[in-house]
Length: 365
Ligand code: 8OZ
Image: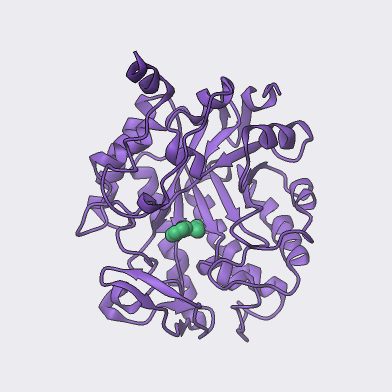
């Protein structure tokens, strides 16, 4: 099968990208400690993957309160901004573009990671099932503290400041992480949002925080450098909603007011059931580019593009093991398989030591 649509240039907000293969955000938990600071090893990793049309950074905490995992990077201190400058410089020198994924985990955290060891915050006091990845190992999730209505301004300010910091660090744009069970998703879905104020109850109210965050972020960057990621059917982090189709339709219609560059949709993740959801419907409602994500191969991505179901496709784990993924897809070359044991945490092993095709050919000579 010829992958001709995959290798056509495409428009994403203010940018023209050379092809349709995007590197999805991937948590790798290798920031320098203490301080959650990006360093040379991270710059090397991203530089190696700069044949992606666009790189979306690993999820990056916008504040200490927004942190939920040991070793993930932040964008709320000057040291972190300076560390990210190494990354954006390396990616730009290699000819690609990079957006930062802005992350507040909400309840998916642990008091040992929070300022003054306070409880994590959430729309409602409902715990995630399972355990948090802390510096002391895996620990049970706690019952989070429900945010007061007047605390929402501070949350929105965290997103605003992080957007300014991302700009200072040299990013080409940002992606608002509203997927996979983190704070914005917790507000969106009625399994986790049981509030009675203007941020809970009706769909209009549950969408409010995302829209206010989007307003703040686009004030800093302009809509054409901002994307948003959602996971309408995802159940990761104990998520559920009673009417995802109506919820997401309403959200997309409202997001159109901000002229965003793209909508990034996790269509398939883990064992979530997506069989009753109509993704095409969202794609047609949205007025920017649609990035499809979730277990795509070169062939299924090409099919999605050729059938008009998406404008770009993002690849996650395939980019972990194949730094030169676009070249491999173009040449119909064999893909390397990623080692799950080195996904999160550690050093260069399983991070910057995956060979390109060129490396492999050199080894064979
Ligand atoms: C896997 C492990 C840790 C974090 C997400 C940021 O799902 C994540 C994540 C994924 O969006």
